[in-house]
Image (cartoon, rainbow, N blue to C red; front, side):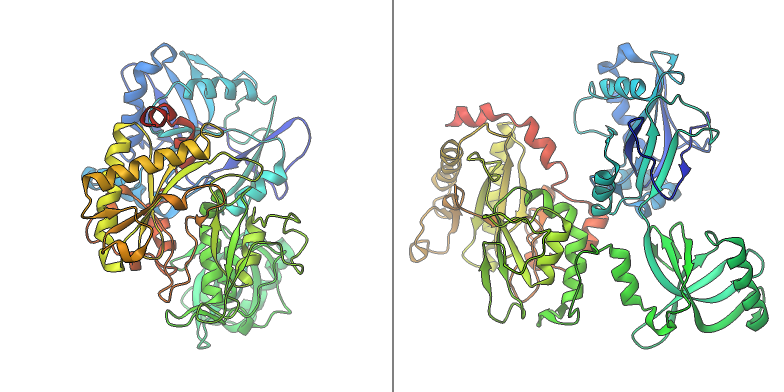
Amino acid sequence: MQVMKPIYRDTYPVGKEWIYEVKYDGFRAVLCVASDSITLTSKNGVDLTAQFPEIISYCEQQKHHVKAHIPFTIDGELIIPKNRLSGEFSLLQTRGRLKSPERIKQHASARPAMLMAFDLLIYKGKSQEKRRLTSRKQTLEDLISLFEGPPAIKYVGYDTEPSTLMEDVVLHQGEGIIAKRITSTYKAGKQHHDWYKIKNWRKITAVLTAYDKDNDYFHAKLAREDGQFIPIGKCKHGMDEAERNTLTAFFKDNGTEDANLLHLPPAVCATILCLGQADEELREPRFHHLSPSTAAADCTVQQAVIDLAQFPQSVELSKLDKFYWEEAQIDKLRYLLYIRTVAPFMLPHMKNREMTIIRCPDGIEADFFYQKHRPDYAPAFIPDTTPLQCPDLQSLIWFANHGSIEFHAPFHRIGSESPREIVMDLDPPSEEALPLAIKAANLLKNWLDQMQLAAFIKTSGSKGLQLYIPLPDNQLSYDQASTFTEALARLLVQQHPDLFTIERMKKNRHERLYIDYVQFGMGKTLPVPYTARKRSTGTVSTPLFWDEVKNGLSLDDYTIFTVPERVQQKGCPFASFEEARNSQKVDSIMQLM
């Protein structure tokens, strides 16, 4: 069947008749669930069923929960999640090209896809296309709420405030948003005025060095540090007719011909909109405008990297070549790009929390200080509150630009006295004794599994591990949670007194792992997930998958250099942290106490 397609617009419509959804970065797909079959089809009618077996098997598992609602057909977007609001499109493309069932199975296991469901076309065998949008979405939400277990299908909700939603999409470097008319029915194709897509464009300025006479594409390049120009992709669309004709004529009159290409030396610059750049290709490029006042030498790779990162315009980046980690050769630009990449994963653990920040303005080897209050010279967007806060992207980038290396947070929100997580700090006597922390973490994980409590693990970024148990809001007091933490610590020591200790005096630990349950409590803090640490190798406090917590684990593998690629390829191990919080069986904790 032909799907309803959003129409591109530069700006979103506003008014009470509109709602706004996230535009996910993936493959449009229609899921049909019948009593005897489950199929997944692209918007062009291509059968995707074999390419995404995890979606099909999930639906098979859910059939008995939704038996009374079959057959139904869901419209959605297939993604491989990068974060809450965007997907890793390159990984999805790779999956789409796979032919071997075994390789597809391997990829599905390593990075499972998810169907972001936003519309309902058939329900209980009846067409829903004539129903108004909000009615269809309500029925869809009710249907998906019947599914159980870790989801492979998620309902896409909506917002009534487009600017707030777009700001969130920019933070997560998503594709954009879709505006939909509340009263709209479902109409195939683009013959409507009801759905509009607004892109989260990145802007880069590049040099146009060639024109292809056969297909009208202009080839773009950027200048490297050595002065050489390297290709980054091609662009054709977006210019008005007069501008295009002028530019084409310039290439024809002055270019050097080589087969179908007309070449010019680096001189003509243009600002291009795109959704990203990789492997000498621009994603969905559109010309924004020609830039006659820009010199070709200023169209640098470094500037393009900065522009593609979408740093907040409210923060003026400075002294980007200053080294923050001299030994590891990590300059400020590298650090800022790291922080921009992990910001969507850091900020949920920082919002509404009283922050303690370790600042090293001249690098980690120089003097440092603890920042617990808002600096007098901070810009207006830094919250003017007594406890220091870092609630959003512009605040985080501003602090990083001013030499903030470590971000530490307590376990509760401002204004609350109840912890939102229990954390156990597993502190080995040395880096070489990390296997002790690995053994302790796995013992704790086994016990918590038996209690049906979800647990998460991360490196400290120093020499140990930190185990997290998310808690529902206002369900446990600090006293109750601390009693539970102490009980677990004492149980470990009781079973393995030769390996573990709760002795606070270092001289009395005798090379045993210190289980620091005292560090969990009101007024205490720990490094937030993904914060860098003030160590010479540039290590990061990195969330781990549980199958990584085994002998051979090395904390030096998790650095500012490696973690961005790790998140892209593997995803974030804390991605389900909030979902786990809301489903924790707190009764298990109370029973142990």
